[in-house]
Length: 448
Ligand SMILES: Cc1cc2nc3c(=O)[nH]c(=O)nc-3n(C[C@H](O)[C@H](O)[C@H](O)COP(=O)(O)OP(=O)(O)OC[C@H]3O[C@@H](n4cnc5c(N)ncnc54)[C@H](O)[C@@H]3O)c2cc1C
Image 1 (cartoon, rainbow, N blue to C red):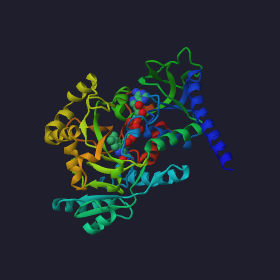
Image 2: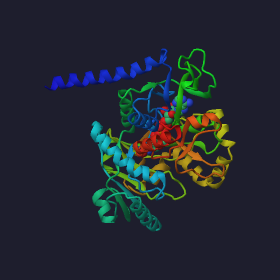
Image 3: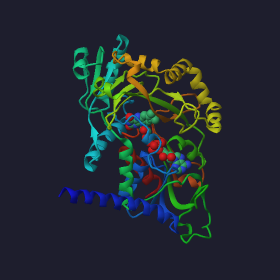
Image 4: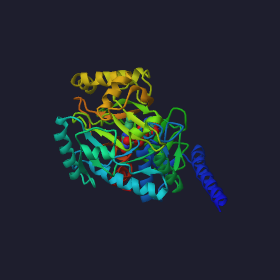
């Protein structure tokens, strides 16, 4: 029985893998046209593609991703937390989508058998002056309809997290952890199983609106948009949705959009707790956030593979999608540094920025920050871990753009293109809810 089950699973995996492969194959042949193209194989693009094909199964779809693998960038390099929606401005799309997205994510993981843990989270005030901010956060969470929140005192904190020291904490039992990459790949499987095509290693370099059908096209003007890539034959389609993460602004500009908000890459470096010290941390432990910054501050996060990550810090990266301290791209660097938004952000926050850089380089400084929550932690308990790069949208006055931005572009092409220009963190938690909103927007705009 068990062996039959194993064979069954292997066969299913083969069929699914074959479908993805077949999808790549088909598009290399003459079938290089479709109704809707989605650019970006991160969790937002995949959730949107899945939702669109669910609602409109008669249309044909292709998802284009520049990397060899799906979910390679932010969706595969993050803390792996299912956020409950406490932090965000009440009434904002970001708040609504996080709360709905978390519920949908739990239900999705149940349905698909994707492992997750509802291990909870404590947001801990360690200094008196943080208490009023923590209470305000509690109210905000209630306004956002986050379930089961409560404030707990120092004794209850130690019952929950024996090594954590704090004065007061906000207990969020519905915060959880999951491997978001696995979730994103599962959305991709759903999309392919419903008939969608995934094309990897296709870097979109331009969009053009064709007034006359190309000679090679047998589809006439049915597919007036040409999506170009430097290496692959072009794809023709009727409508495009872009979800380009760290390149979402550049993709938008290709269809004549304004040049702001601009995406600024912030790299976050994690430390990893040595296995013999895992007992120090049970669930997620977070600081009371600094209201000036949407990054949530260094936190303790258990992972689905049993490891525990600490951090990350947040430093301006010199390369979009650059995961190492010394990664440098002259174009990305000059693009960022000549942008008035970046210059103003640096001027306003120079001390914060330098501190974050220092903490990225000197492990002891990062550990000192973490010891505010777990005093027993020492430098010997940690090693350097992986990094992630966050797509932070920034306006020209140096303000961080905190909510969703959709864009189209100018001229006739604008009516056929929907750019998700900013899908702010925690877009992994919110992904299924974001997919619904993007499908709504696409239906309105493209009259699907
Ligand atoms: C350090 C860190 C920690 C985080 N922690 C959490 C967390 O705990 N919980 C949570 O919910 N969220 C978290 N987030 C946020 C979350 O990971 C992101 O909001 C989410 O993954 C964004 O998904 P995306 O699809 O928009 O972007 P991405 O995953 O970056 O995907 C964009 C895709 O577009 C592709 N692309 C770009 N340009 C082109 C082009 N020209 N042609 C073709 N393809 C292109 C890229 O290759 C990429 O695959 C974290 C983020 C970071 C960086």
